[in-house]
Amino acid sequence: MKNNCPICYEYLFDSLRESSVLRCGHTMHLQCFHEMLKHDKFTCPMCSVSIFDMEKFLRALDAEIEAKFLHMGKGWIVCNDCWDTTRVYPGMAGQRKCCHCQSYNTCRVAPSVLPA
Picture (cartoon, rainbow, N blue to C red):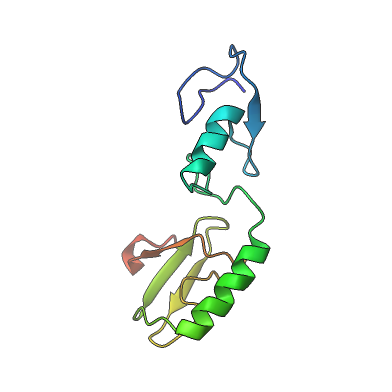
């Protein structure tokens, strides 16, 4: 914990406030963590990994996406949780979903920025 809280930037090692360790291993003040949740931020501010097990939420999101059948167009997405890349095609349901870990914590990327 010899780093700064990514929210308030206070040095955690000397801090008297309670700290929390996220699933990814990054740390922050518990109070800052709760403040982040109030603002609907559910990923680590340092590495963008999901801070909760999102399985139940993702199942509901799967059903909603299947019902709406989103059309995003051809391209690539990268997962912020497992860093896997997935090719998506027009008309493909669940286009924001990682094929490797089933997370929706993804973002679109151009082929030129994909890791080798």
